[in-house]
Image (cartoon, rainbow, N blue to C red; front, side):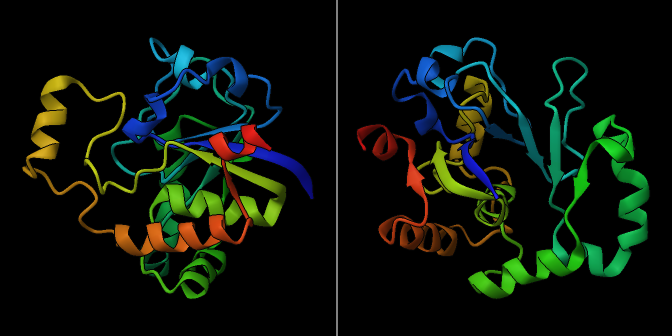
Length: 201
């Protein structure tokens, strides 16, 4: 098992404090889906060693500075119906050779749902579940669960307004409250840590 991973999510809270220089000291820094670093490095650092994504239609191919590792979480209910199609289409969506990423198995995705009692968890939630199996210490930052707002820290002003007014379906297919409660329980039992708490240790 590896030692420590820091997962940077895309919630607005990621920009509350300038943790960039601290984040870049971690040997393993993971980011999620269509994360952006340019213009935000003072808050969230520059380093990215692992890319967690869902290989969905909205994923943007990373043409430069592709992280050395990529882990893909496709929902169980999709894999159950069309696993072969997912396996074929994922390399094109990511712009990567099949040997350069790990597609988490249908059985493992189902196990995450059973363990958490949450159907179709988000990529961010799955990244925590996967990391707990592969790292001794899991630290998280920027996880807001779309509860205080529906936008990402990197969304434009107009998109933020449209999302926060509820004019799109972003996040509505996920059980954000259950995810937050589950993760809070992990935090309370010190199975994972927030970045701010880890810094205080």
